[in-house]
Image 1 (cartoon, one colour):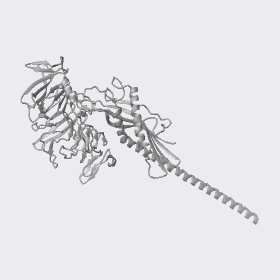
Image 2 (spheres, helix red, strand yellow):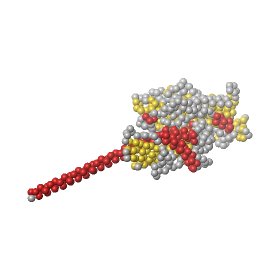
Image 3 (cartoon, one colour):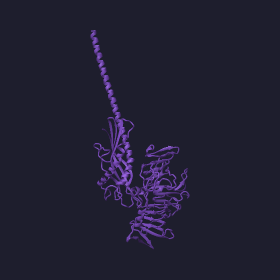
Image 4 (cartoon, one colour):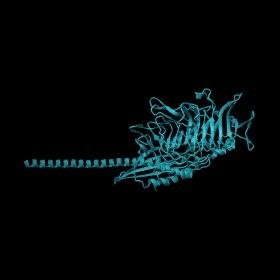
Length: 611
């Protein structure tokens, strides 16, 4: 019995050992499985994060270098004549088939450029076990590989825009190039792929310079003094410089802000290196890829305060250089054909709205012009026209239709002066200190561009009968900005003043708180105030329109402690939002060449997959 009991105990012990061994093996096997599973999960997470990082790199390429390549392709492929940059058609939109065919050529050219940037790119950390790959499809083949399974690339298409009509109106046209971005992360046998589909949407055209609330070629005074945007700066339309902007505290921008970063801009091209970015007070020039916390919302705090410009409609630090016009021959030819042309200086140019006893409205123009270069003789002529634009000249006491080449002249709105305009004015005020008492200079139907070789000098208020906007952008006590009210965007009256080689100046003899409705442009000089730093303080310039100039023009000086004007004028500017709708003064200068004006990325969505 004792031996039998010992045998049973031995069997039980052996069974226990076997059970324990089995449990141990099971636990070991399970533990090893969990370790392997954890390792697999870690690889999946690592490769997914890597693929997303590669996709981020692709997005930066699309918004930076690819954009610049596209600009070059557009310059080579867009039609410089005709109604549409891409596609054909006589209607309000180009034929979709012809657009797709033209944009397929753009995509093919662009694909070669993009492949050169992405096919050999290795956007991964310095770890031997990790690898990343990126390709961007504008065509079905990229880097020698086809599209992923079940992924389709649509044809290019027209998005929106207006045809060119030759009237001087801005004719921006927006097109879309669909793309597929394939970003891959690899680690050993673990592979993860992020596929993003979207559109590379770009606006191309010869936009009128009238579209800018402010444009400078060199963002300094003509003598080189630096110009800073400050908390007093409130611009509610597009702002551009071919150089770099400078920011102090919190200037506000209600429209897009763009800068080309050219360090030595000429009138027609960038003559020096390009350094994109913005200058922040006490910090210096900061490239967009180093801005903190981001290029879209940079902010720097130092001993001089917090410098954080408010870009409510976005900012592009890598914008294209926009050349100023090289001559004014188009305006001259238009004036000689169906406008008013003067071969010497004009001593006075006067605009006003007139009515007759029957209540009919006329746009009235009176010109006192020099008959010789020395201006030892002058001649005064009077013109007027109604909404049908048939031009009349006053001869004696009668109004006679103007006839050229045997046909009556229908006024095209262009007045050209070979010299300077010494005195440009609208009606006088009935009460000298109140600009509201000045009558309209332009009738509700009038559209006029005054172009001169030399300086244009404004001496009185220039007002529209039907202004599109009222008020000015105003910073409220809580720090927000209330834009001007623009509830009359259907208004037609518009004025452009353009000097090719001189300045556009507000005369030292102009009244206080002068009101000017119009787009003012100097191709080689400034838009500013005559003797701004010596004349007494004269209130504000109340401008409804925009400023385009080679250098930034000064309007006055002010006390930095009180914010009050010391000399000259302060600024109260309101952007004419009709300019963004394609309106422009007749034959107002354009850039003259199709180019990419802006680029936007639109995503249809993305998906992730293991493959």
